[in-house]
Length: 158
Image 1 (cartoon, helix red, strand yellow):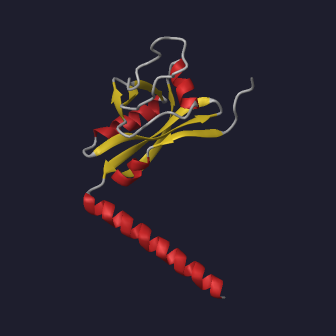
Image 2: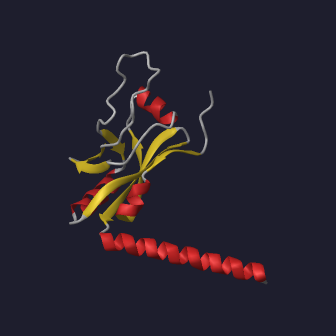
Image 3: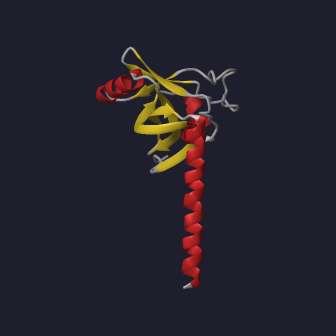
């Protein structure tokens, strides 16, 4: 069977854009077992409480939920919330470590997808938003939406 070409999205962490200011983004490979890959290909994963940590020169994804593959021949295929190793080069790991050591910054996963048949995760360096930041973001989005609506209405009249 030929390898899949292109990008196929599995899941996104939409809550991350609401709760965090996103800074730098990195694409990392995932070390997975066979049943985890099958479960991801079925579109079953959640990044709601997931985060990444740099530990001893390696980056680990923790808290990501990839449920067991129900059609597996094994009785128990894999743990749903086990920690998974992320594949990055040494320079990227060093940059992530420096960034995550700063006060208030954390590493969060934004999405899991397949790129040319390989499972990838997009992680970002982020700082948490406060309540007033969230309100400002919502107000800016609403103002932008209203401006686009008015512009569209004006263009229709012309």
